Length: 320
Image 1 (tube, helix red, strand yellow):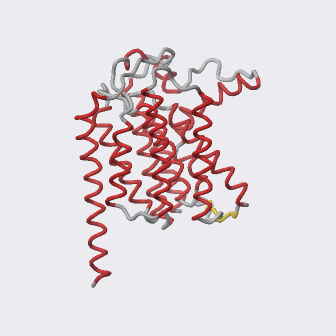
Image 2: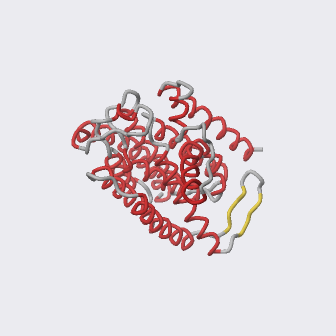
Image 3: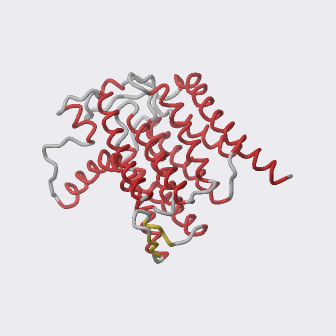
């Protein structure tokens, strides 16, 4: 009888949690959005001045709603609590940057991301195996713990920063994050992995949807670093908990190309004086809007379509 009741109660709590996460995000964003710091526009971004004066840092709202909803409605263990803390830390560091009179330097943010990534790597290896699945090939690979830890740090740091750099068009990074997380949710279902973390994925998506209600073009407010950095670390956790972290590449390929090419371009110039993509503006969402004359809506839809198609191809490979 107890087992039967638990099976009925947990799905009910999960459904209630998803509705609460979405509803509270919408409600609190409407009530508190105007109290957020104001954006000053982006000097080098295409149409960057259009964002000037809008509230930014809305990630503070939807991430806090997500964390509280997860603690109340989801089955939580110590590992997941640590992940929630690290997501909150990334959100808070991003929000403090959003609210600062002078933006934080790249070195300061990079070192903070590195520290968070190291803690996440230690946490993951403490609770999970160092064997990963190459899901599309149907084989397993065991990686030495130290090497795996280094790779996890690279994954987490990279995911935070490419997601952050891809945030520049109303609704773009939020929409792409939803598609990427949904891809991992499907992969978890097919591979029978993820366990309790699957519900957290759905709650996170519900909170982003609540934010997108106000961020769709023309947006009323912006997520800022508080949202994009938290989304980046959560995507990396989802990739790890799937047991197939290599699938991060196809599952987030549009985020990687949009935000990552700019990071690669700048790094090569600064470190090696190597110039690539001379005729391509980065992030890519600026290139297609400025050089290809795509509207913001076209950019969001077309980038989303590309990611959906790639994700479907990945899922089909696993099914076959």
